[in-house]
Image (cartoon, rainbow, N blue to C red; front, top):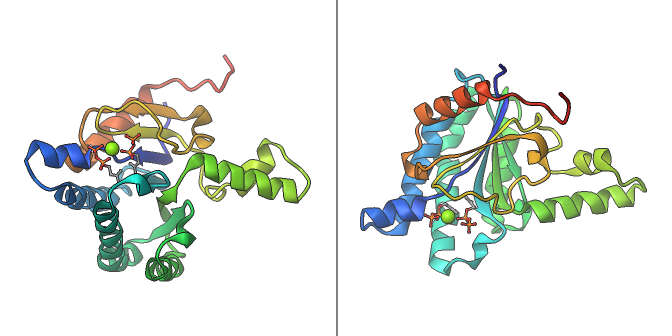
Length: 223
Ligand code: IPE
Ligand code: IPE
Ligand code: MG
């Protein structure tokens, strides 16, 4: 029995949540942000050191322009409104993925947020314009540049190099796939696929996931 230090979540199902209520997809995404806020407020008592959230994939650019705009605007709003709370609560923000190529105002806003939260003692890692295959390719290229390509040097150059090992990977909405998220880091993570749509996911759902995790026997290939 052990507790999960690093939990990652593929936050899926905002669109279906909205469709079930005949609401615009944008409302589903807004409610998704509220679910994030509510969760981040509750990770400390759950003993989680790092929560990594998949917010926008490198493949999500394939969506219609207005949906991409909605998601980017929600990101702007979220950072603006929640940054003071992160600072006050010791939440260190971290961004993984190719976020530097996002719109320049977002990049600026994120750089400020990273600097202002650097002293936090728990990490909220947000995957933005993130693709795991691209991340591994970037890390492998850096490892090659130093002339030593092996699992240690690749891991040392991943965007997640300063995060604890991934313990638990959760995907909401009933889809059972990784969609290019943390492929390397999930090598020995426990996985949990739940039916709950992301806007309905509460701290109680996360606690239930942690309880299931605590029952798992991790072997790492040993016996
Ligand atoms: C997850 O919800 C949010 C993002 C991928 C940004 P979706 O928008 O994928 O919702 P579904 O899968 O269509 O229900
Ligand atoms: C994965 O969800 C990406 C995020 C949650 C940000 P998608 O909804 O984009 O994944 P697919 O397309 O169903 O695989
Ligand atoms: Mg989806």
